[in-house]
Structures are given as structure tokens and as C-alpha cells.
Image (tube, rainbow, N blue to C red):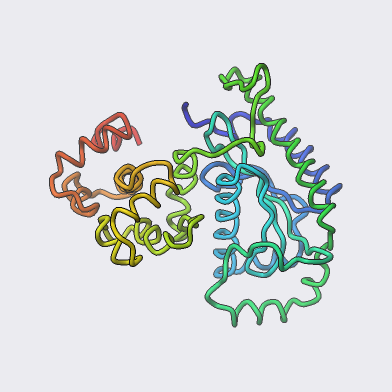
Length: 322
């Protein structure tokens, strides 16, 4: 299925009227992002404290990481994901999925919970806690003005925002796109029944997110060191190296990776390397041989064959059309 562009599908003026109405009703700041994490709509009802944070050169990068990780979890779970950011502020990510493809997400939040907020997962522990605490103290009045909601209010808000995602599906159908139907005539989009495929999960870990050093968060914590190494674009790895890194046997590690992604290590890692190759082909003037060497291929012709297998064209033709 060809990647659809939300910006080309939606009438943004109509979309933003709906988005603004729900933002006012729910007291949540809301923004629509595409599959790359790029904002598609304006940011409605943004809270003064969060606006100050996003204007800060370093702290805004933490916000981008939180948004991306929240969306990643929502895709993996196939449901709205409520979480805490690095400032202990509550946000929610609602993925937009069509035929198992991640199209984007509706991000909402910038609130505090009335109680039991610490039960929610904090998706990012920022490394500069001194800056976080200083900034919070410096803007304490704005921080204390964040809306406070109950969990029941958040559930209602998630439902209302979910209706926005259905509006997107309606627009897709109007524009003549083919949308696969499930269970008779119902169209499935981001429901609890949806189990994201490995390809959908990998699609989310896009070039934009790699630029902010986002890594996949493993369901099995034993795998995290191995997966972090796999996502590290500055090194090439093999199963033996990852086994030593995790203190697991290669066979057992291989089985855990397949359980995590639904595919063998070789396929998962090849897809990541092909994604890095695409990025280098677009953004650099490196030769095919240089890119092949960077990615750890012994032979450039094998790199070309692998690239064509996953992308459907050669690296050279991809560069010409990029």
C-alpha cells in the first residue's frame, strides 16, 4: 500500500475547526502529526508552560522525543496510549492506522491528573534533570495552571479524539483511496483488536526519529541492550555480538527477537540498514560503495541486491527519484 499523505487528504480548515472544538471541550492541547512526526495541523489550546518549553532550544528536543515515543507505544499497543512526559505532564497518543500502515497520530494532553498520576508510564527520563527542575521552578506559576483531569475525563477525551480519527478515514474514502474492510463491512482503524505488524512498527521508526536518537522500546527488557545496538547507526552488529552484549546464547536471543518483532533477526536488521541506506542516498553524496561499507556489507553487489529486495529498485535508481 502506498504511503498516504494526510496533508493531501484532509481539508485542513475543516479539520482544524473540529480539532479546536474538541480541544476546547476536553481542555486538551491537540495536534495532528504525520507518519514522520511532522505537524500537519496547528497546535490548539497549547498550555503556556508547554509553549515556553517548546520555545527552549534544548527542552523542545525532549518534547519531540516524548511525542515520538508516545506514538510508537500507541502503534505497538494498537490503542490510545496515555503517558507522562519528562516534565511529569500527561499526554495521550492516538495512532491512525489503515491496513496495518501507520499514517500518523493525534497527539493531545498537556494536563495533570487529579490522582494516581505516578501510575502512568514516563516515556522519557531526560539526562539534564538540573535544567528540568530549574525550568519548572522558574515557571512554577505557569506549571501550576495546567488543567487537572480525572482518569474518567481522560477516557472520555480519548473517545472523542478517536472520533476525529474516524473523520480522517471518511476523508480517505471520499478521495477514492482503497481501504481494506474487516469483518463484513466495518472498516478497522486503531481499535483494541488491531495488533500492529512488524512493518508498521518499523515504519514509525523513521529517518526523522532517528535524527533525534529515538530507539525502539522493547517489550522484553532483556532485549533492550541488543535493540539499542541494532538501532545505533554508527556501528554494525551481528547476532554473536548482541548475544555477548545481553549475556544470552545466540539461539535464545534469536528466538526472543523473533517473538518481539515477528521476524528473524536477519530480516529486522536488514530493514534497519536499508532505511539508513535510503537516508544516506537522499542526504549525502556518498557513492554506493561507500554506503555499502558504512552499513557493514562485505560486497557492494550484495548490498544492491538486498536493497532491491526490500525497496523494489536499485540504490542508484532510488537516489535519482528521491
